[in-house]
Length: 260
Image (cartoon, rainbow, N blue to C red; front, side, top):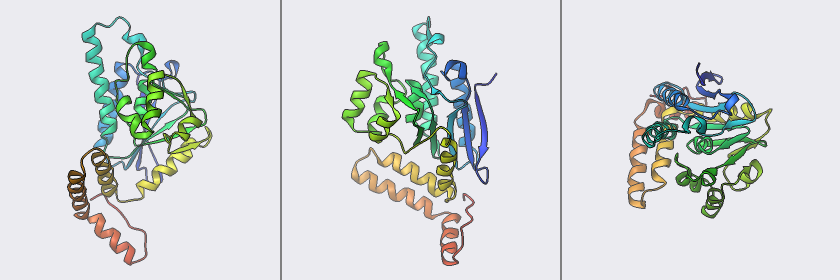
């Protein structure tokens, strides 16, 4: 039985959809489920998909984190080995060439919240609840929580959320700047697909290079950032889509991008 499923969405089937499907455990990820997410992301990375959506198969819980029942009784070596797989899963999500959107309804806690933080965008319903409660269990976020949350919200807010381990409801998350779009449970997928299609309508290589440049430029010094930005710009210029975009503008028509 697979706990992660894959669909193609959008007008031209250019959106890859990852569906977490372990509702009986609030999508808590086991070793098997983490491996499925990792392998599916690797497949999508190699595909012609132009955007990725990750969501739960049911309302009430996006993902409650790692399955602590599976982890209970693990040896230290087994725990570390499993966490290496989890790290690979988180890193693969963050490093996807395509923009990745988390559509969150219900609880996104611990590693589940870190799945969300490793995505590029967050669209949430008013029923979404976020939290990094690791400190209440004697551990700390291990999938990028301490590194990524402060890139989304002010540092003092990130410290509040992480050091208290408290639950953050959707309204507070939006006010703090975490969420790209707050919507209803009934409209979340329609809104998420529409959001994705605004990007899939653009030249895919240009979108991918912009994403990569933004991610890399965020944390490097000014001189290195300036050089790296031009490197990505030159990659983008050297594409057929750039020529098509200019021709379409001159001819007053919609461009037909091919990803080359």
